[in-house]
Length: 460
Image 1 (cartoon, rainbow, N blue to C red):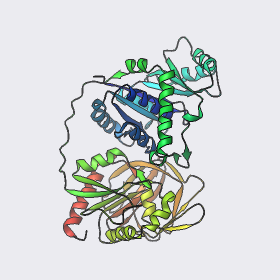
Image 2: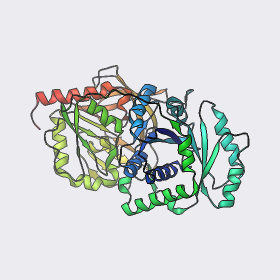
Image 3: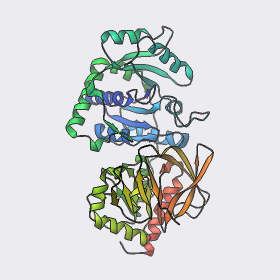
Image 4: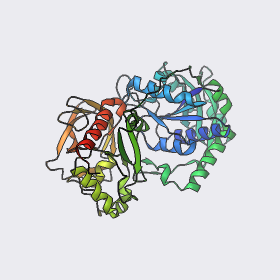
């Protein structure tokens, strides 16, 4: 059985790596190969597309949030379960946290897991200049194995020959082909990036995947790519034996709340949590016998009308918080636990009302970047002094925090410190998407709190 791996990276954001990735995944799927998808960096949307195409979870690999050991553990556990592992990069190949080590970058990831790189170059507005770009990426860090290139948005066969011919003869980068400049290969986008897989019309999704797969099959040497991909070593990973069923944690999962690191859910399961899903849009009540809630990120502002209309669930969540049920909410979840959301048309929509603030949507991005949070006061899930890492990205701000307690000190870009992590009884809300692999004690504390709360209160 084939056991190989490679990374698909871009020269920059928008170069076409997501289209190339989905097209190559589809081409391999048609060959009957089992593909295990991964995504570099703090991203939820691309893994959703991977999972929709392949029918299996896509896992994030982020060297800054998870650390080298965390990345290796996840990769070595999941990659051998398929014929080939494909890792989609983040931004440009060398873009990351902007430190000396290139933390969080696709380049650093390639060195940690030892996977070669297929570089996607947007050829739409160039010809002979492409060779200089490729040679620069090849030589910038000799420790990164840039092995192949595929050109995107190529106008014609003649254009492709010019692009391919620009690669210096001394370069070891192999040109595998191109993707044509085709409107059918463009994915829709909105203010936080590509549109989620659940929001794409299923017929449009199938057309896009078919077009991308056809383009790869017709114009990219996929057999050559597979033959030269890194062969995975035989790995024997001892499976963890979680204490299953210690607690039941209800996870909000629908079109409004769909941003979760797959690894976070698995870490909760490893700590003994049974995960049950619910929809804040459709479900009129919480699942039965739940001991805690996890409300992740997403686009609650786009479904604020539907969320407001579900009064019974909003009231039940507010009651659960008042009765000290442990609740962890991040970004979109933080917005939902406030009094309401004011959309870009200045219309107010009521939310769960656990916290006093109202969320206002902005036209410009409010925050973007890696975050490290130090627990400065009593945190429901983690003792004082504990550290967690994550990522923050939103176009909203909260107003009317009042006397709400904060339990985090956030360090942004290594210099700016601010209070964050809002708590009420056993509820914690934060704009930061925390990766539990950065400190598994956070997930352990969450599960333990759920267990203790259930033993002390029998209200749900």
